[in-house]
Length: 513
Image (cartoon, rainbow, N blue to C red; front, side, top):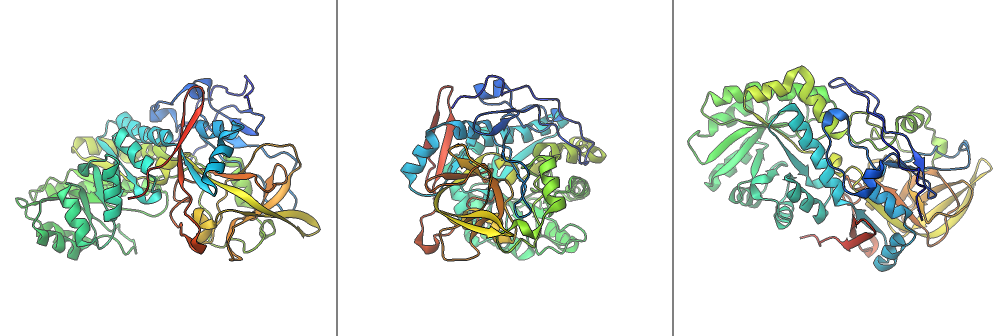
């Protein structure tokens, strides 16, 4: 399936955002391929990997695309279309008339497709943000967001570290070439085994409690640590309150085996200004701690860097007009992820560094800033594929719609298990002519509530048994956070896709260790 020569067009310059502000981000002009995927990428993107651009030029959206759903406006009982951005490698996969079907035939069940080249580019944008601000910074990937070995390898190859919270995650990171000194050990009440292993590999350990510090001291090993601070006003069960921080600093002998490298914190939500101001407060704490003889030259601000899944118009339309009538059953009640995020990923880091001259203060005091993004490093780096096994017709308000059964479960689409809904529309493959068909998607289990898409999605045609549904941009927390061999169904394997100049190549990801 060829792409019209006028489909790729140059991107429009992005709109600049004031530090910490939310401003629209231009994604370029769009062209349409026969497969219904719209591209905002330039021709240069299709020719090879995209190099990281300076962050002041805006977040990288090259190679993005959207699914176009024909057939006019949805009815009262059908959700509006919510086409997702996709990476240019994924677009090539969707446009290829054979590769996706070949993979499905070989795997024989649901599977996830990973695009590690995209992970490397996302890492590069964060590194470029640090460079543009003149800040000594380091990127740790939050491994809990995805278990794929190819992601850990991309981190090793790109000069990034990994944030791990178990001995299993630590070993898996080492197995893919990430050095121990490039690991951040997080999580509460770490086991003695994890503390021992982390110390042996010179990993940076985030101490969460006073008793955890005592257990580390009892190991009598050289160790590098940061103390996790509980932000003012937070009711989190994690971190050390101000009094506990003071006790922890006093407990550490400046000449002993434990090196107090600095402090860390984590905030819920996606507020750039709050992160910047908390980091500024920890600079002051670092300076006071240095006066007590400790290095205190590192601050980690954790993750929470937003991802831009949908364009502003699609997200606003859903958010402002969402109706229970759009859903087959059990409309979500707990709210939704902010699927349009105007200042995402590395652009958010730039806003954090710019607020009240945080970058200048970090430079002036020789403090390294660490970040621990998970979802943001996986933006457009993977998708989940399910085969249609059954099609039923139903009506609501005299309007017909379909309910599909696919060969997997919503345990492979984690948002569904938080009383929410994964909003980017799945792509129906292969492309055939047809009429818009409102469609909900169910799983191949005995659970009435096991739905991959509760809402009725306006698919461009009626699905048929044997078709594939491709859920885009699922690498971040969606595809494997909650996976379980329920009904003794095999866990979907991960397929690693790479794009050569003339064809796509794929292989199975390395097995989990």
